[in-house]
Image (tube, rainbow over all chains, first blue to last red; front, side, top):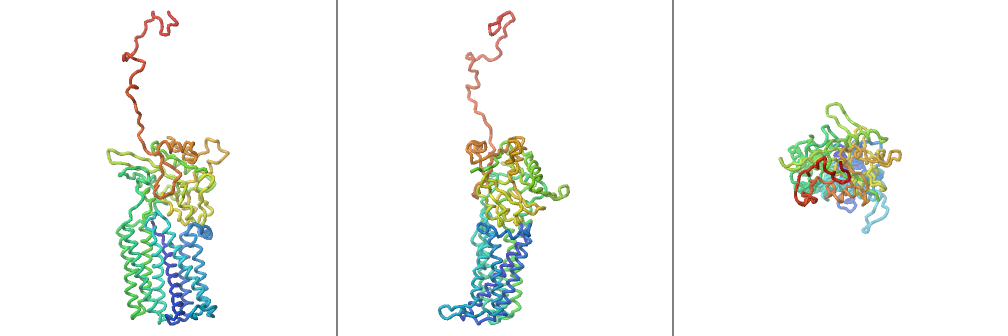
Length: 325
Length: 243
């Protein structure tokens, strides 16, 4: 497939926004049960929600560039019964609204407990909004990933690992950003977020690595034999029927060499996983300035990861477009 | 239920591309707007087409076969492009099984093209919407055309009659009979899309001749050659007239 940068930025940016929101909510729930020192709702959760919204909004803007007719984008909410893309179009704004409300509730200090959990833990509006946001956040991860995982003949994507990767990669980048953010807004929680950022990054490395191994061993189900229905081991295309370009020759091939693809793979393994892990370890123990660098490097790594995610897919339609003539 | 479809006889197709040009001509002239071309007379031309004829070589020299292979939307009975469309621009008509795109609803997100294993749709670079074969839906149901012309443009154009058109759910139709009797098959059956369009395989036309057919049954003496011509003075063969 030809990687579209609109979709690359959409998925990586909303991943950061989602992960960051989850981190904010995790911080609040841990503080509720006394596992973390309580954070300043205005400085940490409210501003953090704003940052999360900025990432989500930037992703939304990026997605518009993918459309041929953006003025009709509202129609995309119609087919939520069958289309994961349609579901994402509905869940993304709903999640953004939940994040905005969550941030507003923290900013305006709506902290009067509405009811108490057993054990006397008061549940206030911010916590309810946060829970709603967390549910929508996971729903959004699933919708985004299933857009790719549901296409059964794109074998590189058609695996539960795709969903796991989206959750873990988005979560990791968001938690890394939360760590850098916490170093300024809630320094006493930096080690907590940093620790989870490292756990998520390592888990993402495992699942993304497992996906790479799986995809390297894939056997394509379709061949020229099934594509044209001739049972012969030796079939060669002599002409695709035209000598100019067409949508079919542009949309489904990344146009780079295999060596370039391999370089991108090692690059994103280094940038998205190895270097952030090392920088996080350094940032938590000593220099907080390393944390921002960890986020930046990991984000660049995730852009490379998403480029590779698209580029590696060998669409079966390419069987029909191999030789110009 | 009706399922209109094309049945393409690879044994007959000569790869002349008449169906390609005829398709382009009909569908670029219709009410749905042009099939736009980019830089048609320049370097690196590009354009929107519903139908293409490709050429494959099967086997190794000197035992090769050339297969000309026309490909357009297969109007699958389980179309993978329809459920993924977020806007509902894609739909399969219940009355005749044609898969269509509503150009006024399409947002050009290209997700359907990812979801089609056959590469049977193209984004029109001018209109920025997905387009694909309509089985000439604006032609086959047009009561103003003579009955004989209510067929897709490609079918009408094919000089060797390699393209048959009809209802594959009607067991007595020409297409159903062709599929049944001449080994019709579908493309990439492994994905369960159940394409409506079928292809008839390349096959050798052989004739079985029995030995007794080589002998003249009316020549028991096994004498071949011309019979002796009667002289003018002799009676004619029918023995009716004599001169």
